[in-house]
Image (tube, rainbow, N blue to C red; front, side, top):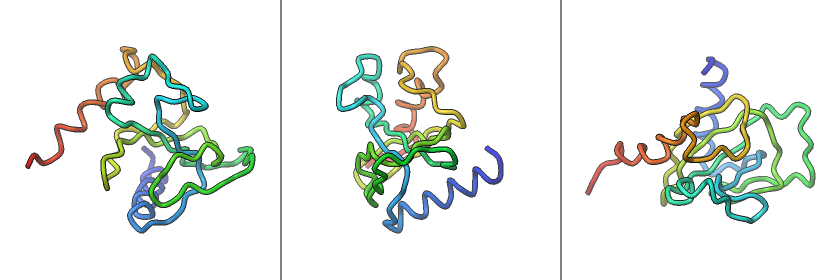
Length: 129
């Protein structure tokens, strides 16, 4: 990530922690228009979501709605090429990846998809108790 991208991620994480609403599209990575994608079952098993983090230049806001502070599903947020991929777990958001150019609906079993491993591996870093 570039220094600017790192700052944007840090600000986003701080804003999530402080309960600030977000303008980007936010959705579970296993759904498309409410329908489950068969090739994305690992995303569902691990509650993997993605957030369109901007910049939003050239983005069509549609009926632009804000993503609430709990990062609920928001299909009416603004879209962007860059996205954060993250796991939602109770009161935590665990960022597992960043895509400068969003590739819609990558198969969770594709060997060229780096999220294939990260979708499961993030759990190993959590404290056990």
